[in-house]
Length: 468
Image 1 (cartoon, rainbow, N blue to C red):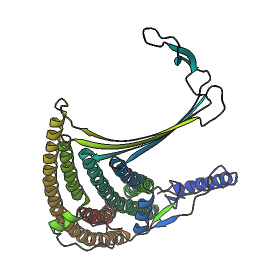
Image 2: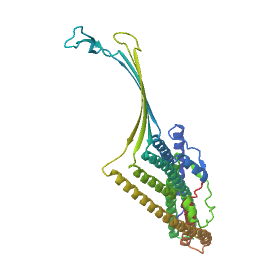
Image 3: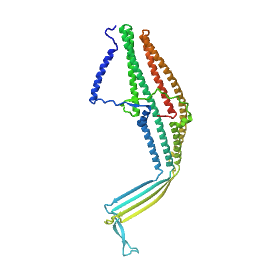
Image 4: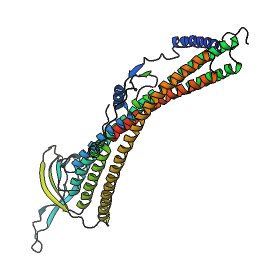
């Protein structure tokens, strides 16, 4: 018997209480000095609010939206090749030095052999000021390649928007599963905390019985081992929950220092859905639609490769105006001016490019066949996923029902074991085993609830019915 020792567990907690008080005093002093930040008010997030935060601040979704915007700019760039191009140019030249040229200015009065000789004189041949303005307009009248590229760019924009929507659904599904996972880990941490508290109570109770001589030292030490082990398990579970919460915050762009409380009731499980119609699913699936659009883009690219054998016709119009002034030292600015206008038509017929165009056609044809194969492959993959997820949900629903019954039974068994031990009819080992099974049953129930929800979210994604 341990004389003068009424509470074997008390020494541990009295020491811990003193340390906690000291730590609290130090923290208050540091906060007052401005060396520690004051915790932010906790924000409550149900699932709908969290998904709205994801749509607004998730970096992957932001990048996806930027990609769709970039595809829209690509359409404008492709369209520019089909629209007229115009250019305006102007210039001014100041000639600082006169240029002299020998120029015939008269004929001699005496003929030689019937020909009067010319008289030459150096004359200023340039103006001091030269001003010019020109306007040019060019239009591709017949350009099959540019026309095909414009159609390809439009389909690429539609494809990118489809991919962006697929990315949104994928990220929302991942966010739902992460939200449920965090709640699972928090629930497990709570179970471990309650188990540790119950183990402490058992340890204290056995300590009193040991002092009274109704329990052995083995019972006392075994209960102490259970308690310390449950404390370690609680610490590990709390760590896992905090790490998962960090991932949840990062995904939604929530500051890591912000306190977050998840309020969704995950015990309210959605009903088992009916089997989905494959044709309806295919029309709703963004990735399947993206495959169809990829095939359309490949067909346009094939037509574009054929268009490289066709001629192009370009029309042009040019108008120019020029003005000269300051001739022979005079200050006049408009001594001479001129205008010019022209219209042109150019036809280009490609003859030989070293076999590049033929190879381009073959590459485009291969790409078309590849897209056909990808579509068939994606169709089979979706059909398989639907069957697999339906089976997973049915299995998970059965496991949830079994886990609920197991939890109720194990809770009753634990209460009976504790009552029997208190009355001296049971052993400490029976209590430990009953407590362990009850804790395991509670954790198992939370795991099965998560498994059903995760399967349901995957089924929503597989059927193209992702909702907030």
